[in-house]
Image (cartoon, rainbow, N blue to C red; front, side, top):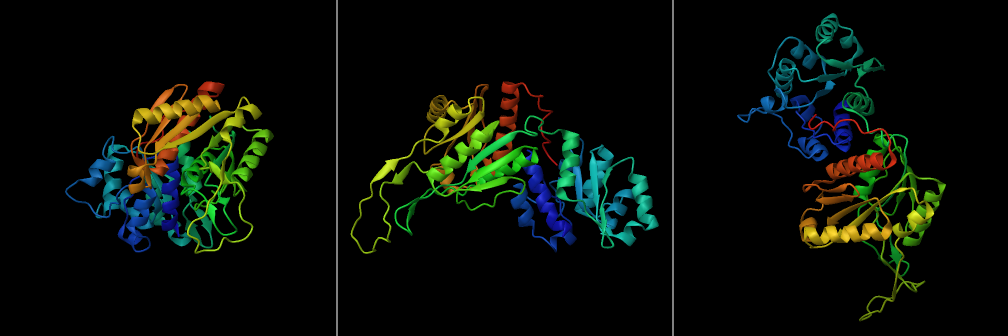
Length: 395
């Protein structure tokens, strides 16, 4: 089970802006496929060393900010303590120990092995050289610590987003649907993924998150209060209600319907008709009312255009930012380039402090960057404690 939890740990680190590369043992690959780890991190998984000198690139001086061994077996521990480097994992660790790269060891084995004199000797020898995260002793096993505990140790070293800790955050995410008849609807292709990633990242950063969520494909993250909605009207009512309760940050990442059917049919429209005519009414922009309800809220909007130039996208984002009174606007082009690879994106973050373009990359990294930009801008505007140094570049 610990090998599977390594995927969860990698995802958590990603949400905090880390660039994670996995080095997998043969035993781990018998339990999980390399593709799972590649999916979790966006980087190729190292299962063997080649002429590319992967162990030097990752573990020599300046190669990584930290090496995490999760889960660490008695075998791997013994090899590190005795300078044995006959696998990709042990070779990376040998180089890292010699280079002074911080190493975090998360032990997992049977309790009797953990109590073995040789294992205890190896732990003692490495005690001043690496950091151990104590295992969970239960059911006769020294189980690997939970990913959240390991993440906490990493954040203790590299810094937490103190600007978001304890902040009351509302995130609107996912699509809305407007009925044509009892079975047909108007909606968008939004999966809700970006909004859910933002919610998960802000929960990890210590924020108190309420997720107002339309019928997206992604599961709401643990730790966020979930308010399910379906239509534009339901989302508007839920957002306004939550804002009135008190919110410090509102993130409008939802793909809300711009039009609703004026008179939806109460019965299923019969098929076979040559054509039908639908009369649509425009829906009010939810974001435009938020500052009127709570003037001091830090408001983040999203603006999507299709197949426009960077200049046109920036102009549209700036215009929407002025109209809604937003403190920050996230803009992206959802045209042909995006449709060819919808798992990757490139966004513009526009705020009072300037602008920042991301490179085209996975949505996990986009979400981590957005969260960090929100934290910095929110800190600057409200005078909260400044954020610590940058998140680790590679773990």
